[in-house]
Length: 291
Image (cartoon, rainbow, N blue to C red; front, side, top):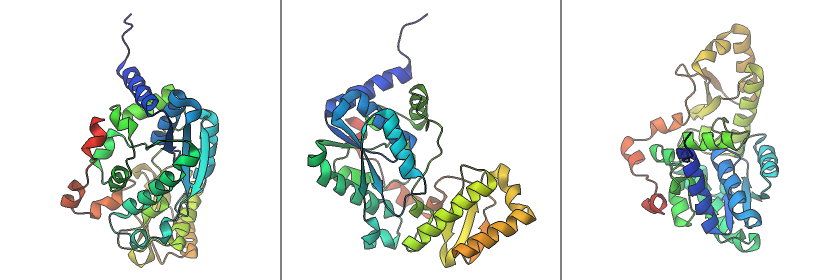
């Protein structure tokens, strides 16, 4: 039997080596699988010199803060909650296709301010190699604030991240992607506290009603709700009794129209409205791939 380390073990060791080189690091910690793996690795590599920082704002879905607190406690890493104010930024509210840039700029600027009091010198996020294939204006903000991406530096794909999370017995190893609530609002439709509250309540209602963990309520123009569920679950929404319940509740929340997307759930579907040439213009900086 070979004693040669497997590919995932080699990447794990590389990740720990990279983080050990940071010495004192703050991890932007959302409780998603990527940032959870980075937080676990940072704790193993840096011990008390690592801290996980969770941003809390109106765009955070119900239950995410509590999950972050539980995960940080399980890992044993120091955990700090910071309140971010992206909703006060006109660029964020405008909700152009680069909205995430303003959100990440707010987060990273807060981390830079807090770094001395946290006792850290390096900021890290949870970006992995597969993030190159999607529209990620937030990576521009990461480059501007010199935020490191240790998963990219260590050569991790999303599949690798989930595998290492499973090996480390992290309960989020198979957690679906949980982007912020503002990502459900169509580009060009203003991001407001009322809209994200409405989306959050609608999704919580549907998850309980349909017993689903993964779905989206997209807010289109004219307060139209576009519901995405996995294709195999579309029949639930078309049941007359369920349909009336859903329509009644979402209109009660403030949506004027309620529709079901027959293409089913797909992560990042809002990005299909962005011209391809614009998507290609947003790349992960080469610096992050080579360090």
